[in-house]
Length: 165
Image (cartoon, rainbow, N blue to C red; front, side, top):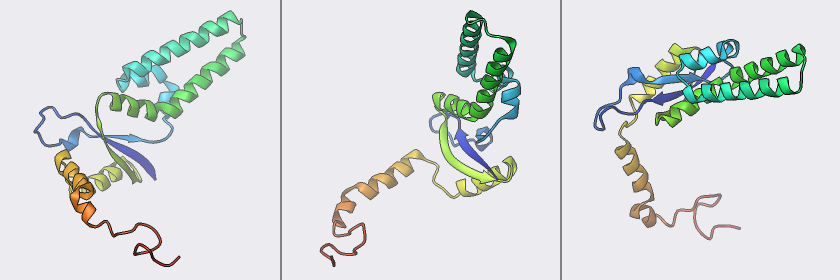
């Protein structure tokens, strides 16, 4: 079973409905192709800032290895470690970039593959309110003046204030 996070791009028009075909599902886990072709994978996903940070880190490591006159084995090990790090953190870099671009995170979904995860997400997504104002009003109503009326409710082990000790 794979775990995916679901991201919605910013709305083109403020009052427009959500466009499910533009949603992005980011699989959590190791990305083999990001490890093997790090800079190309970052370019393919348009992760420009992550690519810039990768190039800076790679150049700094190469400069340090050159300054220390490290052997070929050490250079290979350091480059392999950097590639492994990119493969392990590729999904986090992708999510970070989507977050920076104001994409809305709709949560986590689990599925055998991408298709089953999409199916599961959109089945439950249709049943939820999509408007932020609807969700915001639901939250405010639960904490507003009506919540003060039920102040006798106790959260914890005892159903009434002053219950058994």
